[in-house]
Image (cartoon, rainbow, N blue to C red; front, side, top):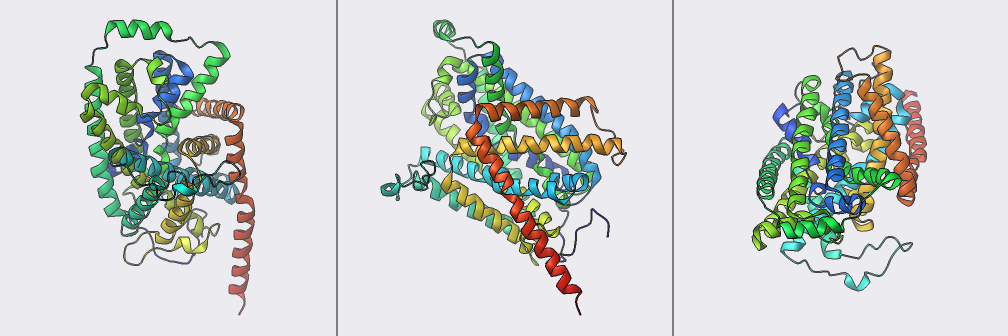
Amino acid sequence: MQKNEPKPGPSNAHLKQVLGLPTGILLVAGIMIGSGVFKKIVPMSQALHSETYILMAWIIAGIITMFGAFTYAGLATMTTQTGGVYEYLRLIYGNFIAFTFGWTIFTIIGSGAIAALSFVFAQSVNTLIPLPDPLSAYKDIGIGHAIFPFTNSGIKLLAVFTIILLTWVNYRGVNKAGILNNIVTTAKILGIVLLIISGLSYTTPATVAAITTAATPEVKGAALFSGLFGAMLSALWAYDGWANITFVTGEIKNPKRNIPLAIIGGVGIAMTLYVLLNYAYMKVLPVSELAQLGSNKIAAAEVAGILMGKTGALTIALLIMVSTFGALNACIISYPRVYFRMAQENVFFKKAANVHPAFSTPHIALLYSAIWSIMLVCSGTFDQITNLVIFASYAFFALATCGLVHMKMKKVITAKVIGYPVIPIIIICFCVALIINTIVTQTEASIIGLLLILSGIPFFMYFTKAYKANAKSSDQP
């Protein structure tokens, strides 16, 4: 048996290659274009106080993301197995590092993204139709003065229901989930384009511009460096998810060709929309006013309200609903495939390797994903979860990029990689700087992230021990 072939697992069935390149591109764009682009301009304005620096943060984050697309395009030539980055790390570093990544996907990156997107979807529904708060009497009951599961109970209940609904759709076939993704992603791209056109056509009164410009403080030195990285953390959340297409490699037609093209195409669409949309925000509302918006305010809704009144605010609420719903669906398509591949390698709960006999989906892996994501919805806030996602994602991004360099030097990867070796070196340096800055500026969140990553060690020992015991017993007559 070759190293990149799946080990015998609880099911001998295979996932089917049914998704084409257009669906792949829209899947990448669909995951990326979620909630971040509509609200992250607020914390970015608070950190930088400068239109130029904010646009710079979006552009740099977009360039790093595109560099990452080039890197993963090279890694994608190594295998056609489902699992993507998990599989790349397994082939490069072995089972433990790959498991640590997969476990982090399960505990933070994947489930955290699903929880955050479902929560923001429910928030956007709440702006249109105020939801009841049936558990408000218990809102002050908390765990460790940090987790309050009964706060915003109406929003949380809707978020939970949405996860269950989309898990059911994905349970019944990746083709159906892919069609839903294509429809929703196309709709939200068109909606964002209309908002960009409206914003760029807006003329700010000169007197307002003069007053707000004079009141804006200038950020310099170390504060600028830290603020820029903090702003990029927000931008990178909006860009996050571009690598998820690799997780469904086993269900993409001609994956060695189409995976790289899908990543580059999807990232290109998102980067163009993000930069233009944030420029449009700042053309309508000065940075100083954006910075003053509270955490419960959505910048896109405020801008649309100025442009189109109540109709604009309603339009943005609907657009955020569509965007987060589509991104959530795309995440539910992709992340459980990692758990499925881990189970095939006997380093996850073994039933996650099962393939549904009728729908050809990793149905048990989908259920595991839904259960943990629902727990995160009840226990964490949106920003706490997204910060953990970026911190963990870029730690493994650095490892994968180092792996690309290693495999190129060993001539395991012989295909041409755009920008090699300069781009991988830039990515590694950027990831290290981002991780260090995150640890310094968000120490508590970083510690929680590290603890969740390290929590996989006893599980890895359990899974490997259980597999050896099962293998030993099966060898006995």
